[in-house]
Image (cartoon, rainbow, N blue to C red; front, side):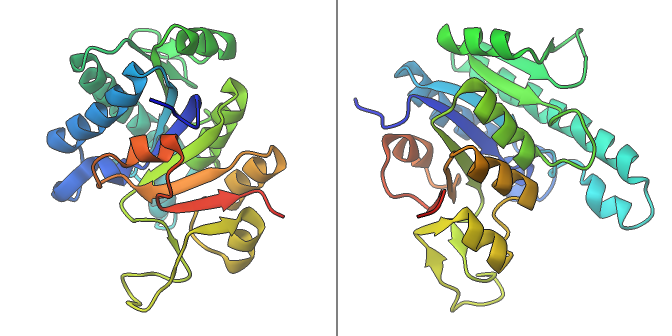
Length: 239
């Protein structure tokens, strides 16, 4: 089977893990994602994974209500570690070798993030889950995903969400909203579309790294995206 992309950074939103529960971790949803990841990993695709923490804690939202922003972001980083460990367990139950690397030192149950070690794990066929964002406040897990993708030499970022791509407006509020099949980072920034935060998009654009935004809830979309099929929205560098 021919895959278009050989090394992939998969960014999973924390909200995608909550499934129908509305909060926390839904075991069936986590297992379903692990099954999709396992299929492509067994075919030889090198996979790095970054998972958000919004299903457990959103520091920025609470910062707007008085919580210290730095404290809130640190708490959000810890939430991503919880999600990373849950995904690691699900992947290992699929028979995959995995490693969780954390930007914050937690040597009792994660490895520290070391770029060369991460690349070596990927070369050996292990799935590497990058936890705790960048380890710095004021930066989202989207930025962490772009940073890690550049560091491991990923061919593409796959941003897995609960929607089927990028729209010109909120499709929930506006049924007439139009979905883009392709859009440039600059256009997304100028339109103020909620693709990634501006820092993440600028970093991806400056380093020539494209992103596919797609619906994780549709079975097989991870594989289809890596094969290069038209799934969701492709965010291009520019003309």
